[in-house]
Length: 225
Image (tube, rainbow, N blue to C red):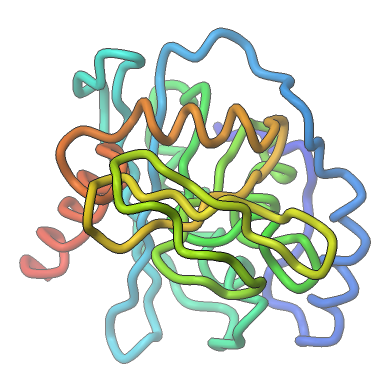
């Protein structure tokens, strides 16, 4: 059975969800508190039945070799509406259900979404990390918040993602000449380490390999359903 560090309902009214984000963001650990990373996972979330069902796919790879270790898919009823800035309340129940199918939790999770780079500094990667007390990194395909200069075109170049005077993440070009991804901390990891782990999970694709495989697993399941 999956053990949670923080228990709360996810089917909240939006105002209550915002209040909970503000309450829990103080628990986010923004420095490195990782055990040796031997496994790294990624989660991908989608919706079926007109949004009434939430599906999460998780893929676990060995680290640093990125060899397959395990995978799981879980579908649960959707209990929260689509509201920008509160997507973690909509997605995490299915993610927890998928993680509960694994024989053991990974050492590090990459989340397809924001972490600290969020209006209330509590995106999906922060929320999931605090609930599990597990190191998490946000790796988003687009920018939700902040300003930045385009990083140089070469592979693994990056530039700071800023909100005013505060650096909230990094804009990382994982492949030369392709659109960057937006990296921010989730929990129990520094931004420097988050960038390093994302870089080490990239092969020849834009997305880190665990995220690419989780997206493929989720897409394959969608075609079967």
